[in-house]
Length: 478
Image (cartoon, rainbow, N blue to C red; front, side, top):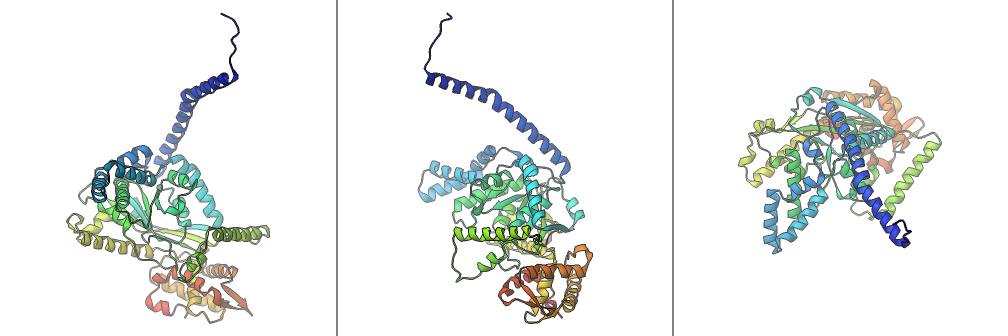
């Protein structure tokens, strides 16, 4: 009974490995899951007590459950039947395609990553690069939003920093779910973005089945009360001006809305502006139809050069943050109230009439967004200089022209952010930012626009061009 038993080494190693896997599977992994789930629940409870808008149950539902709900939703199943008939393909083959779309779209929100990692990272990045400010908030309007309402933050799209900035500044009120383009579908970025609650969109897809699956997910998220952040322009502004709205996501959000139901959709206009947009020169280059297309290598070299120059400035103690970044939160727009005010009944409209109604809604929301775009120092100085690009200004003349412009904007109801409530300082800051980038040069005490950088000057002036009265646009520098 106690005799020594000899076993081959390979058998001992396999037995040891199996024992370790059994221990891991039955004791260690369940314990780790319990520990992580406990910490996650603590974060959720803490955030629900702190946030103005509680985390909806839809957002906290496991991703696999949401994928199944989307894949086998009656609306999606009807789209599958239609696609199978049109293509002459088996239904099962189309279902496999739908399942792939659902997995691509549905996020995997993790409250711990959002608040403990994402918020910390967004705050550090935003405050490192900019002097971040909230200029105006309609607190009363935001406080009137009902607990069961679906909230949609609609905002202008100036930079990819918008995602970071808006999520950071809205974090004391709610979490935001973004629609993110295919550019972010790279490992490991896509895993992080999904964990932060964003969903991926193929913006130029002409696949009807894909659009039906995407539309149904957005409808489900809206019905589930998920707070969303939407850029009605559909992409970054290339010349600095506000772009006309695209109706895709906006149509998905409102299409399944029941005016007689208990839930309202509330749109919150958000205006964003920067003293410096990180992608400004690249965006302007994209406007040139004859430009030579550059590859990924050129983009990497450009980014490395930008980082290198700024690191060198830091080492020389000559680096400055990129000016001010400001966000304004305007008066919420109730979709139910809008339908009542316009006399539109979405349940009684033909498809063409529905598109016309969504277009009207989009245009009104873009007007509301434009009204709360912050006026910042660089935009003020750029507007004055762009009006007379060949003129040489003394500092006193420039300050006088900017002060006159400020008066015109205030009379028009624009939302200005004046640093330190000092108009003279605001001009100094704006002029310094433009001089650091060689957009403005000084010679014999006079300031003049660099001809090579005139498009860049117009880019920043365009950010507030819609706020100027027509007469003021022609005489901004008088």
